[in-house]
Image 1 (cartoon, one colour):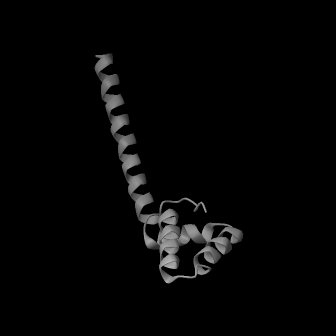
Image 2 (spheres, one colour):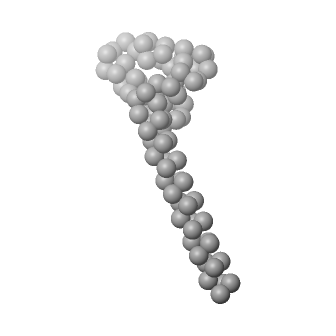
Length: 85
């Protein structure tokens, strides 16, 4: 009797934990991996990083290069990381 109660308790605990992880993952995707979340992440970085990243994008001579660099900054910011030059 005691053993089956422990199994039931463990199953409830496991299901609850997995449910919390699922909700946390969904919240992370919504708040970080969307365009507003990407912008918030970029704004949360130190001013020096933002200045270097902005200069890296606007200093390109060709428009195609600027577009590619901007896309890279957006992609890495959307994933919650900093760009590596």
